[in-house]
Image (tube, rainbow, N blue to C red; front, side, top):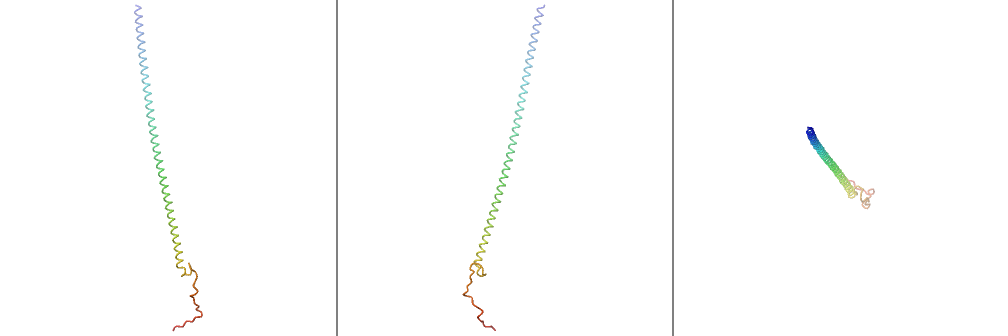
Length: 143
């Protein structure tokens, strides 16, 4: 009987070893699959987070660019307004200078034209030939 028992023992031992090896292989496959799932999930999260951060960066950059353009436009507008104010002031000052010059010219012309009547102006010489001496001349009295 001993050889039968030894054969059964050997068969049982071999079967246990095969079952243990199969279970070990199944556990290893399960472990590898779970590790792959975790790595895939981690990679997916990394990808999503990277995309979110890149999207936030793009939005923030666009907002800054818009703000920069608005500020640049405001500066350009203010510059144009100041240039227009300077131009208007220069035109006003030119008009005032022309008006003043016209007034001076008109005064000179008036003094030149009517100056002789008032004893001033262009010709200050008086005609002595038409003056008569009234001290020696007698005029008749009227009744």
